[in-house]
Length: 316
Length: 133
Image (tube, rainbow over all chains, first blue to last red):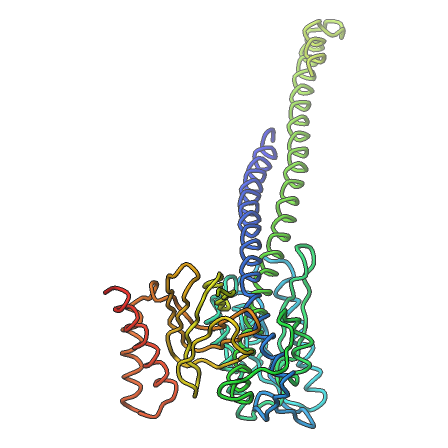
């Protein structure tokens, strides 16, 4: 069947070429979005640094209160997990590695006899846990590639309701930390209860030097009481921004790999196609030569090839 | 005498420059003005207007939902998770928020969230119309 295999291969190459165009476009889009997410993370930094600075000053001023957000429990039984991943796939192992880390934590907790609550951030997280029959306490989605502070506030509210009411003793935050363009890793961080103010101040690395001798209005405790919920929101917002940057970086990498693979496939298929074409040409020539020979034999002539046959053979 | 003034929110820095006076309203303390050389101070802000008088003499006004003001030696920092320059107020949105808050207050007049929301909406409307006039 001359040409049949060649036609099929040609069609496949065309479709791979189209795929390559799409993955290439997605790679470029993801690249610009990483840059934008990083800019936003940078823009958010002064606020959280200043906030930490205020906590430092409060710590230096000796303020410590029995705020509900600082409530420590002797034996942790019920834990809430805030699992932050993406709304969309096509980002390599981004979603699955966060989800896997979360599931591992949940299994470990269950083995110890504790109960879990899941707060999912991102459509993929909800789908995964829903499909496997886990109970979801609250779900958030539709903003993971470009989160706003308002989103962080909503999630923080749901988390605080759980924690304030005593339904859970601890809240874990699971998201992907953006270390550099090349490295992002899923992390499990304790989110609530908060550390005491001194530890927070040390961990935060705020730039305001802690000066004693501040006066506070309404009072150190009053300020701290207003401050801690903001601190919770700011930390959640920072995690969402990190997760968004990681998601785009992962997608860019995945799409680059897909583009490279498509290119390789195109080369391989083209080779196979060329070989198929060559084969069909050779077969055709053999048929012609064979036919001519048998005709010549039928005429009773000698079997010496004609110059015409030689020309054809040379041309191949 | 001028000092550094910074006004930051989680998503962006609203103002950064030199100022001669910052006026804010703290929770429980009423309106307070900061001039150069003010003692170190940290205050929690009410739903209120924050005014920054720039070194050049211009006054900038911001509607603040909540936040903090921190004064150290030669710098005044305003931190707010929800603030908007009074020139950028979306009156339609504020009006809508006001309607929602009043609706919530009709069913429960002690709803703290709704009371704050109502104040916040009213403040924005007041500043927006004030800026227009």
